[in-house]
Image (cartoon, rainbow, N blue to C red; front, side, top):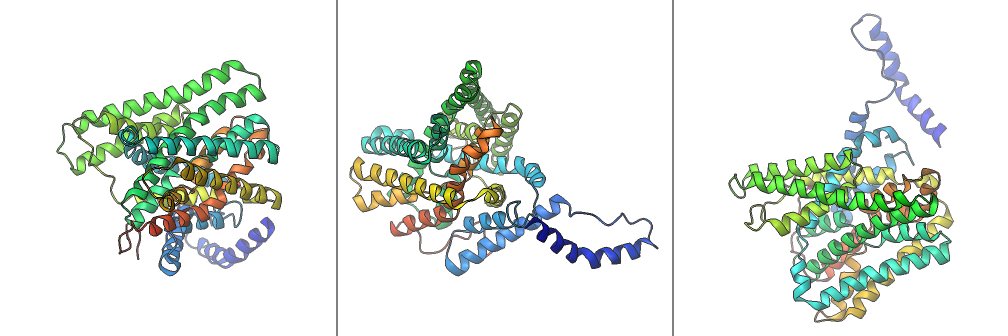
Length: 431
């Protein structure tokens, strides 16, 4: 496959190379013919292709645009055509971190813990979802797939929660509002928080199992949790302090919010603290500490959809399809079935005032698995690269499958609930 790609590219650039070399004989100021396309130019073209694929799928078959972005990344990434290299992906990682961070901050800002206190059935359903999802996935990975306890726990921590970015963007795209929509957001936010806690604990378990280094097993989880809290707290304090001096709802407040979020992203990257956890906590702190409602109604501009395109194209390109086998595919599919059964079971068992069909729609709406899971898996795998990448192939392929199916399931749940507005939302689109 690699040789075919090389020969195809050579044949495509042969004529331009010859013409360029002919020009060089007379125009000495010209640089030599470039051996490869500039990574920024290539990545920009990839984003345009991702946007067009997303818009075409949305216009023709009414699929969520996110699917098109992911497909573009998969197609042109290192695993398939290889038009975007691993080095280019590494260079684009800060942009992906910023995109995911801003979306995670929005999810954190929407987390309404007071609703849980007022409504015990919601607390019961969220706890059931968290517990059953982790336990079912852990038992599947440990007993049926044969992973060690540490890597089975890592698999469960990575895949137990829904994908906040996908859920948020799908809800915005469909302009859904209502009981089912709000519960999907709540379950996604609480599930994400629980998965982040599990993620931190799993870091210690992995250290203890693979290296028997108890110092790192204890300190690393604390570094992740305390570091994320402190960095998110600094970003929150700075954003609120500056925003109080500005007119409410002004463009200047939006700029301050984004700038402080990006500052938190940069500090988190420097300190090796997970960006997704840091910005989620920043969003939670913004919602809880903004007593004067300084930034309560300050929303991100519609341009954050551009960041979503970057995020999902990069995630699609990062998926290790070159390692795919039918066995791992079947195991990943089995994990998704177990995960779906756990979430449906939690919604059924929890009861409450919401009718069972609508509770099951909530269970369908929280099925997406995407960028956060992929980034968490790579964070854990980077600790011990010699075993981590192969051990976490299962959740990565589960995320890869849900990248394509999850947004459609979430959209279907919102439409079946009857909470979508009649017109289609064109935010972030060209159609």
